Amino acid sequence: MSVLAACLGLFWGAFLAATILPGASELLLIGLIIEGVAEPWLLVLVAGVGNTLGSVVNWFCGRFLLRFQDRRWFPVKPKQLEASTRFFNRYGIWTLLFAWSPLGGDALTVIAGTLRVPLVPFIVLVAIGKFARYVVVAGATVATTG
Image (cartoon, rainbow, N blue to C red; front, top):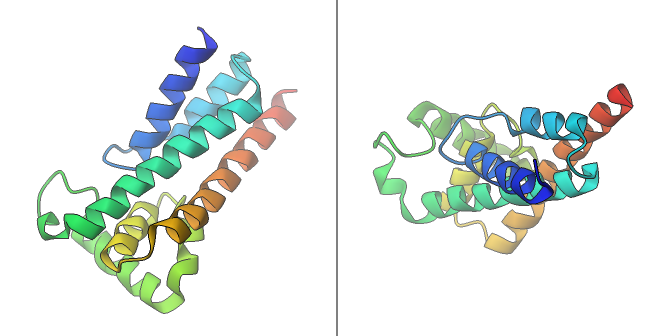
């Protein structure tokens, strides 16, 4: 597998995992590191950018498409939206550091759009959390596989 193909696959896997499709981009990252397809730092960068941009799509959904929240294609279910709204209202913008979380992370990014969190601070906080997660996953993979 070429480095370009691996990076494109990882980018889209991470992007889609942050939006409409359930996915485990971490597993893809681990597999690519184990296979030695590219340097771990490059794979972390690609996964982090893809996953962060996927969250930006969620922000736009919250900002402009919330009226469609009852539709099947909407990225967050009503119960997740309600719970995440309570959490976000209680703890504020800093909750975006947890946008990487598989339980409610995507909903937080939609809520941020709904509540009109400015896009630049949104991207910064989401990226910090998502890149940190990928760094930890990559570091643990490298440490355990040599």
